[in-house]
Length: 152
Image 1 (tube, rainbow, N blue to C red):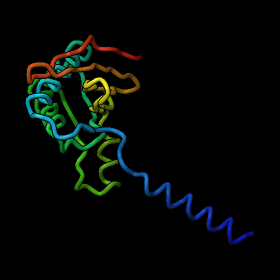
Image 2 (cartoon, helix red, strand yellow; image 1 turned 90 degrees about the vertical axis):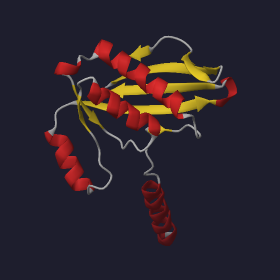
Image 3 (cartoon, rainbow, N blue to C red; image 1 turned 30 degrees about the vertical axis):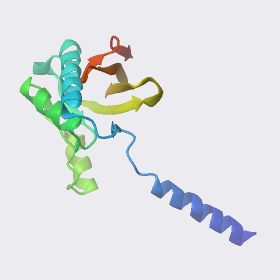
Image 4 (tube, rainbow, N blue to C red; image 1 turned 180 degrees about the horizontal axis):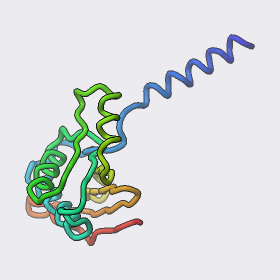
């Protein structure tokens, strides 16, 4: 009995270690760069409305290796936002120390697709709030499929 309990605890511990994949980021299949650029431009326009660049600092809490993330960071900096990025090459301890010394709003994004409706969905998580907008593809371009939905 003791052996079974030990094995069960070991399996639970290993399964917890195996699920370190991020729940934030770009989960779209390969998508034209023009689509992600349009969505990033739209996201920055919404951030400009809600968070003035001269007095808002963001702490990006995920890496941005995808086209959407790279474009988002470039556009935010061009508009005057102070932005602390997560660097994957930094050891975890040093990265956390740098993040803790930087006081800014936490910023994350999720970009995914609702296959049954052929819609893209962008969610920006700023601090404890989220903003979501759907996009549809029409005539080889992506267009907003509605207004921004904001949860406070």
